[in-house]
Amino acid sequence: MKLYRPLSMLLAALALAVNVPASAAERIPVLASFSILGDVVANVGGDRIAVSTLVGPDEDAHVFQPAPDDIKAVSRARLVVVNGLGFEGWMERLAQSANYRGPIVVASAGIKARERVGEDEDEHGHDHAAAHEHHGKDDPHAWQDPQNVVVYTRNIVTALAKLDPAGAAVYRKNGDAYIAKLQDLDAWAARQFAQIPDAKRKVITSHDAFEYFGARYQVRVLAAQGVSTDSEPSAREIAALIRQIRTEKIKALFFENMSNPKLLQQIAREAGTAPGGKLYADALSKADGPAPDYLSLMRYNITQLLEKIRLN
Image 1 (spheres, rainbow, N blue to C red):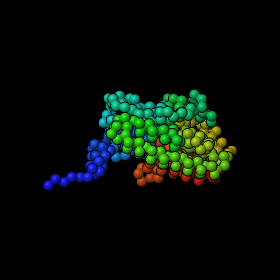
Image 2: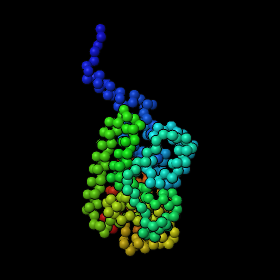
Image 3: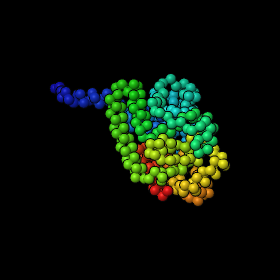
């Protein structure tokens, strides 16, 4: 006796087979350069891809040194996603070492990069010659503005749809859903900062990673280091920053999860104030931390910033 399934059931089964790989082993291996970008890729790819990252949570991409396992990870990937804007100065050499011939997607493509002021000095007198060696003129920290992450998301949707046409509809749906969350985050952040007088919107951070954030929400962000965490400020620059903190009575001082807090602690002591806590700048937290994904990272940072900015 033959059993016939209704046509609707057959169509549903076919759709499932097209849109979701049968097992984890069949998921497309995608490699992202660092943890924040890996989270964005995972939100777009969903169950169709297996995402790994080269620079993990609480790790610093500025000083990343690829190991043999990283070469293997690149060689296994079918798609590599990077931030661009000079952030991954080590990526080209790593791809060559891995003999990688697949696509490399620059998530920031199409974003208007912010240029740092001057070739070797910024507007606060900080010497950024060492940072230029790594990043060139462009500030790579574009993800600090959620509207830029909307661009990242669209670029990733396009890349995954090209690599895996059978999943294109899934990637578009996931991308649209994630963009809606990014827009909600941005609107919430704008409302929060709109309640703070302009004169109070001043922050000191460990390194110069928040210029896009500052431009988006009209927050003046000063940094102890340059755009790269391996740039070293001079004694003159530190003294100037301490004078500015005292003169402007800035209370919002923050170190970052992937950088050494000693410099900022020294500055805080000499300025007669206290660091406000930790921000997540270039990396997510571990899974059990307060910033295990990009949306949580931004909401956590903004909440911490607002609490201290109100004291300025």
